[in-house]
Length: 389
Image 1 (cartoon, helix red, strand yellow):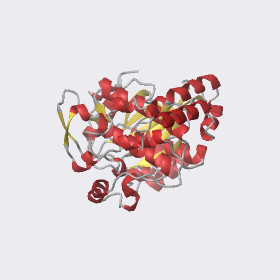
Image 2 (tube, rainbow, N blue to C red):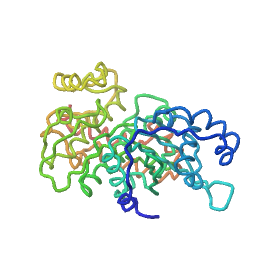
Image 3 (cartoon, helix red, strand yellow):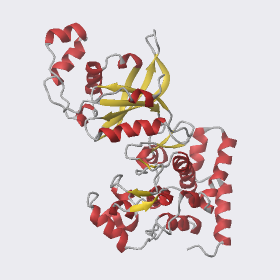
Image 4 (cartoon, rainbow, N blue to C red):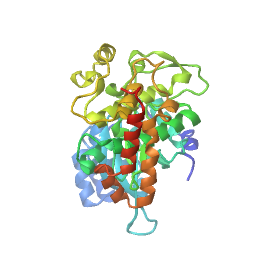
């Protein structure tokens, strides 16, 4: 399969507004089966918004048949996993060449709208295709469909972290054992993109973390990521998800390149706080998600507080304090975070995972906080470190 980056060099985008073109009835009868003819008469005369096409499986298939019919000879569309403002993620699987049945291999198809922010969407494909890390989903190919790009990539068997919480774990807040395990996977991905590629992810959140069938944690969605290679100073753009944005991003500051990983570390801190307390720090839940000025005011006004009634270790709370420090000079970078005692406990959990060999059993153990060696380790750290909170 041709390298996605090389494919990008020959692509010419068409920025005009997308419309489903009306198709004559006689052409439809010649090219599609009766059900599709009925579908075409329903949708062909309607100007559909992008989000409408990508929230309905039948509309999506009709759009693909019109723009790139060969695509559906390669992939079977199963279901739409999630829809966003610029496209959607679809569960699919390869079709076996020359056979009626599809393969058993499930994949994710991420459709990206190229009408708006063309440069940004191209950047995502180029960035993601360059990353080779076990904690980042593998890319299998790149395709062009009308005004959209499509990335075929590794599917998260358990979905994203939000889905994993709601449909698998079914209990909030999460145990520190599970939080530590999730942290381990995220940090390895972040460490990789900063040290090997000089990339700030800029949008770390639970919806951008997927979990595969072996319960591996993977960081995805590089649509707003920023490459800072060869930069000494970085002018931060106002991108990402509001509650996860660091104060420097909200202010659109210029920072030293040496502090780049601290932008992602802050987002990691917000995520961990949310997993532990089912809330956002700095009383952000009370703020309109689109009111960036007020969000920044809250962060600057309030000190980091931890809700009462939660039995959290001092080790974990100390890590949160260092990740969520409002002063970028005092905040952890990714290297310091991966030397923190709480992070180091992840290896104990990984060792236990290797002994179990059963993904389902491992998930259950994480759910019921059954990694006893980890709990004993944290208790020992708490006891020996009087400098913690």
